Length: 188
Image 1 (spheres, rainbow, N blue to C red):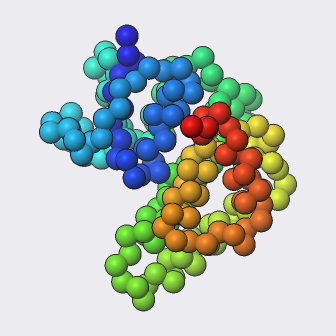
Image 2: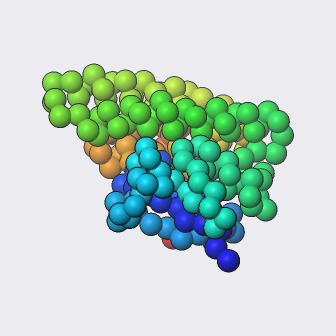
């Protein structure tokens, strides 16, 4: 029996990678683009993805809530951290990547006024510099192993590069991205 159906918005770093997370966690899910489901807004009135509908009818929205639900429903709860402090730091970085970093990236991505774009890129670069500085002292965001926050950050970084923002000057981010890319969740 499937765990449920995940509705995604394919180009979004907030949802496009979640099917891989489910697979890594051993959760069998159906995946649908929210754009191809006629009654999507009747199920999820805000009309945004990701959204999850369990096989029991349970409905959930918001990236971080879905990530937590998937991990807590799996046999790999340590992917969100093993100790109380690791779990808290993982949540911190998930929140930062989903809110601050994705928000800044979306601002650059959808900016139609070219005169405002340099300011938006500068804001994004200051966030990238913050992460780069933090990675000066550790291999991953929360110590020596990849957690789910690392995956979300990695996916977001890939989207940042895809929209044309140069991140090559952030040496720790470059090394970090190369290491995270080796994780089995991202292999395919």
